[in-house]
Length: 239
Image (cartoon, rainbow, N blue to C red; front, side, top):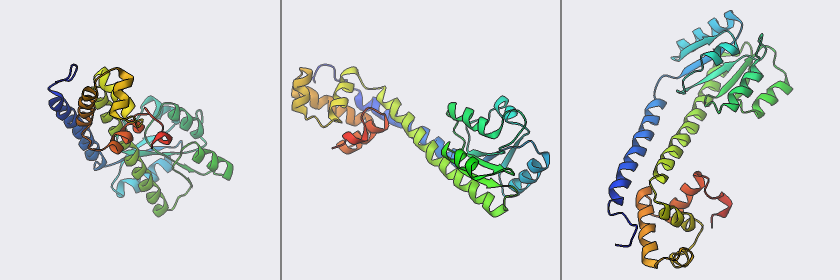
């Protein structure tokens, strides 16, 4: 066995793949939980009316009378979205959206405003809002907008979980395996890698096999895809 190659690579890979599967399964379980819709509006009658509609539709609801109140009681990162008014005393909806964006907050935002105009709606959408509805929003349109936001949350959250799992697996690579991994995903052949690293070709083959085993992939294309997701190579470098 070449120097630097662990004989328990398969055991380590299996353990870490199990961790990944647990995280992904946890993510899938979260996607089946009852979503929480966070309503931020300074008008109590609006909060009450919209909350009643959403509870009747099967959602959990949390109410906030101001943007500041939501920031002070920041929602847990569980499946849901934010229904946000634009004009409120103190911190307004646009400012809250900007602050949440800087915090990389996961929950999608749907603006629900009685003071909507085209420039404002365009600004919110460009800043990442899922939708912009005018009050009073028809029930059907509101529920459809929420479903779209929840679908986007699911997609984003699953990508986040998978990325975390890949990072966990990457952390199990030895320094030499990382070097080999970096060169393999850039299209280098074993012979070229061996020359560049000053190692025997059979040693590089063993390292390459260990990397593939730890990531539980069977093709170079899969390994390149993981490297792209980890930000180790740009998509444009794929051959």
